[in-house]
Amino acid sequence: MKILAICQYYYPENMVFTNICEELVKQGNDVTVLTGKPNYGYGEIIPEYKKVKYEEINGVKVHRVNLIARKKSRLSIIRNYLSFWSSSKKWIRKCKEEYDIVYSMSMSPVTILSAGNLYKKKHHVKHVVHCVDLWPESVLVTHAVRKNSLMYKILYKWSVDLYKDVDHVIIGSPSYKEYFEKVLKLEKKTTFAALPSLVESNDTEPFKYEKKFNILYCGNLGLIQLIDLIPEAMKEINNPDIQFHVIGMGPKSDKLQSLIKEYGLEDKLVYHGPIPAKKAASYFASADALYVSLKNDGYVGKTIPNKLMMSMAFGKPILGVISGDGKDLLEKAGGALIAEENASSIAKRINEFADMSDEERKKLGKLNQAYYFSHLSIASCGKLINDILLDELK
Image (cartoon, rainbow, N blue to C red):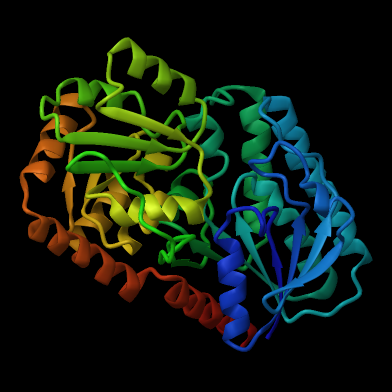
């Protein structure tokens, strides 16, 4: 197949869309990517990429369009979204190349789909979307807009119109299907495929922790990750051999550091700041357990967070403060302890993990890893996407 793959984010930005496109190439496809110039997490367009319009990376042909770099302010993020929306459609209008099918990954924002829909109409091909972030639900959960506001109504209509034009939706969580039917009022052909882990193995030197039992959280420190509960739980831990480690950045970064100092948790709770995914893999490799959390709030709270995939891939036992699809997945794998959304329940589960033998924890971790590589890996996800695209061509 000759595939046009579209997403605002691509290598060197840490996004698994890159891995999926490379996997589609391994399966014998000709893959061309339409993306932006890398800036996510950097606060600017990476200097060496400012003049790059085209390159080939591991067999993938990558076209990069101009956009406004994403910074921290909300206005900057909006301008970043709209600039890719505009530039990607401009590229499509000029594109004379014929592709068999379009595959888009719908991360934030949903406007990423515009270019794929435009190519579909222009060249009369199918458009398959991998939806891994619900819109406009995401802007409600992060409190970016209120549900009764005019802005929400605008985003709702825009989202419905964009989703309506696609032919097949690959959903990142089973509960997305209910959202499409009950909230967006759309009957779409859907197939479940969770987003794989960005990193599936580690060839770097394992990080050396100081304590006997170390539990790690790595991910976004946002409003729906229940970050405030971590220091609250560690206040209740009396075992001096237990240490909690946090890697990441987000709106709750400053609050976390503030609570560590306020509660005097410097020896119990260590904040390492943001670390690139491949380097963070060394922390995963030597941790005794991994922590995955997601607030049970709306449809987003029912989904499978991507950090759960990396946690399972590394073969570690998992402490899940999670519900919905994520909880169901962990229960199927069999390698987790589930806590309720309160500090006492989390502290109790941490103590339970610490009291286990190394062999007991390794057994749980192996269950998670086996389930991941059987059902959720990049290779299995790539094969499923390949089969869906082929089926749409029939």
